[in-house]
Amino acid sequence: MRGGAKLALVGGVFAAMVGTAGYGAYVLVGDAGGGSGDGKAAVRSGPPDRAEVRETAEAFLTAWAEGDAEQAASHTDFTQEASRTLDALASDAGFERVQVKAGTPKGRTVPFSVTATVRHEKHSEKLRYDSELRIVRGERSGRALVDWKPSVVHPELREGDALRVGEAPEPPIKAVDRDGIELKRADHPSLGPILDTLRERYGDRAGGTPGVELWVERAGESTANDTLLTLAEGRPGELRTTLSAKVQAAAEQAVARYADASVVALRPSSGEILAVANHREDGFNAAFLGKLAPGSTMKIVSAAMLIDKGLTSENGKAPCPETAVWQSQRFPNLRGLAPNGNGTLSDGFARSCNTAFVKFADDVRVDDLRTEARRHFGIGADWKTGVVTFDGSVPASGGPDTAAAMLGQGQVQLNPLNLASIAATVKAGAFRQPVIVPRSLDDRTLATATPLNGSTADQLRRMMRRTALSGTGARAMAGLGGDIGAKTGSAEVDGQERSDSAFTAYRGDVAAAAMVQKGGHGGDVAGPIVAEVLRAGG
Image 1 (tube, rainbow, N blue to C red):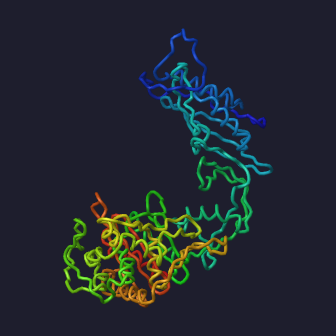
Image 2: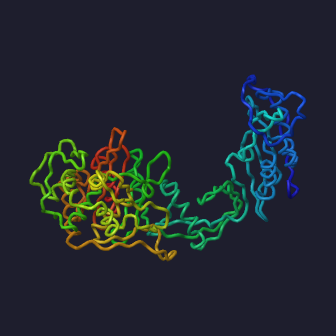
Image 3: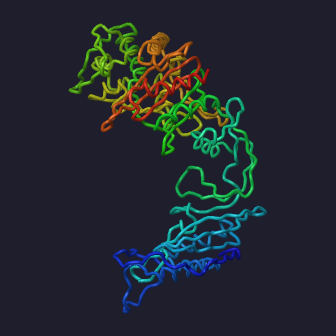
């Protein structure tokens, strides 16, 4: 190894093998190292036996322990890559005084532990980790060889990754809420990935100084690198966000009751995001990045379109038959919803009557809904929130999708951030692009949209208020006083027994939206999540 680093092999005598290695058809195709036969002697085949496993592993680990990367690599099936990676432990990762301790082999797998001092200039720290190697047979050479993978050197390494030691790529930050309260991932687990992104983007603008770290430099990724060891702590800079620790705590608690649930809260007057929470096994930030059909919550935008086009109005005719057919596709209403041949748009909106909207499909162009969503609600307008977000998609939809899109089905894709913004736009009368850090932090250009027509906004607010007080959102919004409005949504998904649940609402200067996959009716599942967050918003 470079730098004169030496390693010591501890426990050089291997324990008795567990089990008996059987011969079979497994061979490694195209080993790149370990030499080759002269073409005359028979080439061994089949899995390596116990003696070969012991001898090959011991030879590899011994050479590694002696600091001879080239010799160690000669016992692998990929000599060039193995030599480069082993050599870089000293030159790039600062490894010194390394000890390698072999464990008890299990079949053809040999576990081992590594203990090292990691040094960078005047800073050093101890590192210990476990790894393992597997012995295979080279197809051409017939030799027993270490099946080379970067994870042999460190279990966190994948193909193309590298270990690096030095000044951290970004200074640490202390993210605080709008009132200066520190936001810790231990208290707000949903914020973990978001705080990582904020550190990467804004760490150098928050006034902190970077620490010294050992990290995995990921290949071909723009995400933050993974820190393995901190040699010296940096001085955190303070990054003020628009979040509210109080509302965030309520959001985390609200989504925890359901699987695959997400919620966002923001201020209609400014677009400032107050909370974002997800409860998912995969850790995906569905609140900002999800792409789901919003169901009848989309009727807010559809109603605005119908009013703006002069096709109807809040108290205008919008009959609600039991079913409606558009271009051979049948659209039913929710089970149990009584038909109303004399219904108004407000009736259909508050009761979430699908057919009241489908009956207008003959009168709209394929791009009318997309235009309304972009022009007045900012959907698809390339938002610059401070972190990566999906900003909604309402494509021009022809055929049966023209009607389906008005009901938030077909090709329409939104997430809780988009839905909260839609409700906020109605409340404020104008779109305010959501942000999670102030625009002044980087002077980024925010998306804009044309304010709603004053009459259209007034009618939407009255219809949303009726929905919250006596319509499909009344049960969830019960007990919430003041200036309120709501809209429920349920989206049917092919092959899924229960519909996805959606709900968006506002109360005063707080708007919120939630989506729950396979949650059922929007008012029953997503609704209570939103109501709990609105209560916390005051």
